Length: 326
View (cartoon, one colour):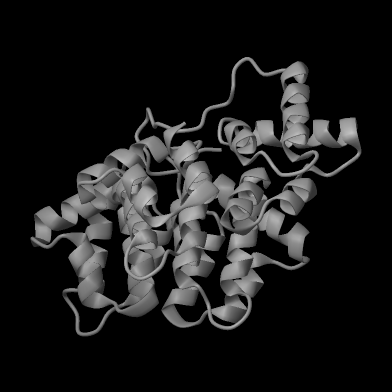
């Protein structure tokens, strides 16, 4: 299942080890057991393996581990590791659909709501991923993701998330110029050309149209009405709905740039938003993290690695750098 928003030749930082067969699975399982056996833990050996295998290969290692040693690999890793290194390793060992489901549940559980996480996940993934995450959420928590979102959000923002949660975005690569023109007119009439804002029109178009269609809509809107579409969103909306609609515009226009911003935000200011930093690096490493690195360098004048070096420490820093540089 692919992500939307990346160029046709996208660049991951982690690729599956090739060739990789049962003997390789056994060797990796044995190496991980050795790294955790006896006094002390060889964190460098654990990082060297897990940061250089695909998520699917990590699942194969986990199955081989339990068949060889009768022990759960993730449980053993958690017992041997701690802190943020443990968080990264557990994220790496979790099937990606389950990982996203857990991140969404964390965003809507307890006091308050982490709107940024909801936006990042639901605005940046395609239909196949949305449905896989919904299925994983139901299996993990015994309830529908949509019902939890409804219970935790409201208003225009809640409606946008519910629309995205349906996983029904048009994925036809062919752009209809007539529909583009109609959408440009509808958005103008719903925003700039009226008192107030018809939020439902923005929701309907931005949550359902295809990536190439929306790119053309944003381009034509700017050419026709002289205003960049991002500015239209900023002028017409505030709060979480503004952030959500802007995320869609950014993901449809340049997904790598959007995630470069997410990484920069996670490491800027006082402290580090570690959960955000880990999620973006783990989830994008097999997709377009190489492209995100390029966008990060161009946007902020420093490499992603240098930011991580300055913001993190110890084995936590080492595993992130390994995943970014793999």
